[in-house]
Image (cartoon, rainbow, N blue to C red; front, side):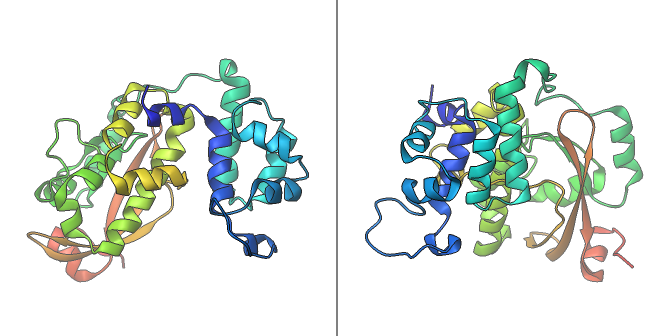
Length: 282
């Protein structure tokens, strides 16, 4: 098993350890001085904040104690100042560990979307819209979306995937500024991490992560264990080879039963609307 595949299985303590390493002492009211072998809080600092012994925290982080109580996880979440999304992710990881046999198995990553969702895509014309699976595999799209993204190389693969495209296709780096490319990379890895509790054991998940294992921009983000929500709207500016500079607001709706989500690309201005023949917001 590869390093990345093994890390997928390590669960909530890998997530919490990544948060400890990213939280600066001054963020929790502690002085920052002296040489630190690792970034972020020391184990003894987090243990004191969470009301735990250093020895117990060390056992947890090293995987020698694999059954922390909900109270312990809640104390660590509070001490680490986790966001609502991060707390939800931690709760899902813990639930999967404690009650996996009671939970229905998630549908396969590669499941097709429902016929009515495809009908919805058609009715959204001329708004560019597509449906993604839980690991950003591109499941379905309407003709306006295809006309917009095909010149970008998004659909070059037989089984297109937005994360693989962003990190491996050189054209993804050409259409964004460096800062916008990095922001989108953060978001995509955050989406993949959010899918880990349900689909981390799927062959497609392993193949995707392993296939990106030699890309430094991916591996550094993966190690940081970000968590992002699909449903947060975002604004993007990118350079289209045919249409020029486009401004897009992305709106997302969850659909189907397999962690699928419908993405609508809403023109942010009249120039973009005219370029892609979709109505601008009034």
